[in-house]
Amino acid sequence: MQIFPFCPNPHCVWHLKAPAHPWARPKGFYTTKAFGRIRRYQCPACHTTFSSQTFSLAYYVKRPLPLADILARLSSGESLRAMSRNLSVSLSLLSNRIERLARQALALHATCLAGRIGYDDICIDGFVSFDTSQYFPSEIPIALTAHSQFILDFSHASRKRSGSMTPSQKAKAGMLYRRTCLERGALSRSFRETLLQALTLQPPTLHHPFVLITDEKPDYQRILYALPAFRHQTETHRIVHWTVNSKLPRTLSNPLFASNYIDRELRKDLAHHHRQTVCFNRNVAQGMLRLSLYLCAHNYCKPFRIGVRKVQQPQSHAEAAGVPASMVSYFVENLTDGIRAFFSRSKLSVMMQRTWEKRWPTPGKTTPEYVPKYARA
Image 1: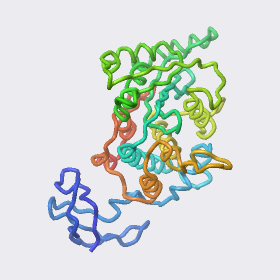
Image 2 (image 1 turned 135 degrees about the horizontal axis):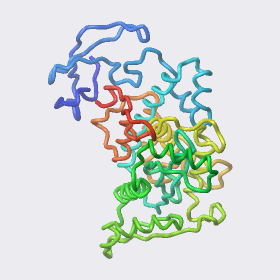
Image 3 (image 1 turned 30 degrees about the vertical axis):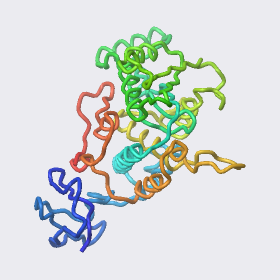
Image 4 (image 1 turned 135 degrees about the vertical axis):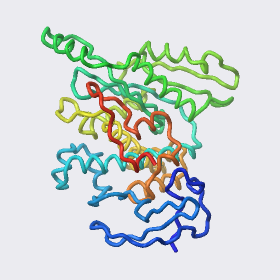
């Protein structure tokens, strides 16, 4: 009899922890065109029926696709249209597989964050792109470790276009902004929640104060100084703010190198963030899922340093940041071929939950995003 790790019903007493012995009762079969004959089971505690496919990343899939190939194409600068043509699939089917991979990556990343034992300075800077139109720039503050370039978390904010515009551009911008309701204080909110998450993941201690490295943007200092954690510091709870001029050379000796590095990688590796491109985010929620998939793959799948090593280097950014090698292997093995992550069993941050449930608003769009039922289980 097959042993399942838990009951897939979120309301079952065996959902978080099931017995070690075989507990699922066989309950017949059903046949699919994609996978053939599949056995069904029943949970004796809640009487919910399920199958082995329920725990698979291919759950409810009518056409299997090579997920590892999709991840490699996405991380290599290939656009969604090009991927759909090369794989001979529709754009909606491809987006569905990327969403599955992104949710899996978020859940595994949250698990690995809980096991991280390293300590490092934290860099936070806003990555600037745009969504739907250049009249709606976006700023994505990303928190990452200064020396290992390990991504902790990130947020998103949509804002109005700044800078000089021609009279026709001003007229078009005014028309668009009258029809679109943008969140007030979105830039402050996104930086604040990213900073609070970094403080939660790496709280200051007696021997390791929390060192925050940013550029000289006044909003960063204002938000930091308003936090109770900064205003009420003690000898064992210190927060240090290190500001760096953004015009300094973006070399390895720059204290803000980690943020400059990930900015370069995103411009290079994600088609919808290239400079002067027609491949931009038409949908913020889906764009954040693609970004989370890429950043998680950067943490665990990409080598920490490329080139000839005179001394032994960590194999990935996660290992360099203090994540045990066993957890890194667990991430890599389960990302494309593991047990499907369940929302109710994943310890996600507020921003990860917003990405998982596709709750990032797209400028000009008023209807909520469609999220399948299995993604909310």
